[in-house]
Image (cartoon, chains in turn orange, brown):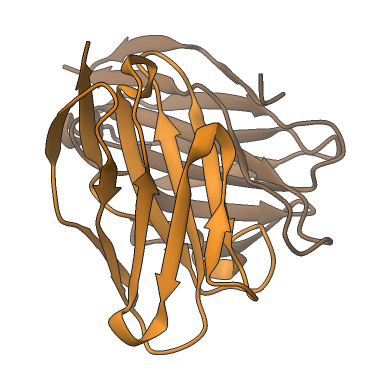
Length: 118
Length: 114
C-alpha cells in the first residue's frame, strides 16, 4: 500500500518569506499527486494536482509543486507567502485511474500546519 | 463552495450507539467517497461508491457501511460506536468518467463519541 510523508508538522514564517513544504510518497508505480489546503473552519480545497506531463505544476493562489519521480517527492512551493496562507496543507496520492481516486481512494499525509506572521 | 453538503455538522453519540451521516454530492457527480479525519491527522479513506455500488474500501471494519442513492447522495453508517470513532467525517464527490476532474470535499460532520 502507498504512504505519504510530510516532513514538517508545523511551519512558522513571516510574510513575504518563501515557502517549501516537503512531501514524499512510497509507491513503485504510476501515481497521481495532489496538494490540498484546509483553511480554519473550511472544507478541503484543491491547490494543485499532477496526473502526467510537465512535472512542474502550477496551482491556485500562486502555489506550485514539482514532481521528482526519482526522489518520490512532490514538494509545494510559493515564492512569497501572505498572512492569508495560514492553514493546514495536505499532500495526497492515489494510484487509481481517474479522478475518483480509483478503488483505493486518496492517501493523505498527516498535514503541515502553516502559520504566517504579519 | 464545492456543492457538496453534509449533515449534521456536529453531533454527540454514546459509545455503542449507531450513527448515520448524510452527504449530497455536487450535481452531475456519480462518485462519492468518505474519509475519517482524526484530530491532528490527515483524512483516511473509508470507502467509495460509484453508481450505487461500493467499488473501493480502506482499512475500516464492517461496522462502517454506506449507501449511495439513485440521485448520487450518500450515507455513512457506523454501528457500535467506539470512543476512537470521534473524528471529522468528510464526504467527497467527483466524476470518474473524465480524467483530470477534481475531487470536491464537503465541510464535514464532527462526531464526538462519549
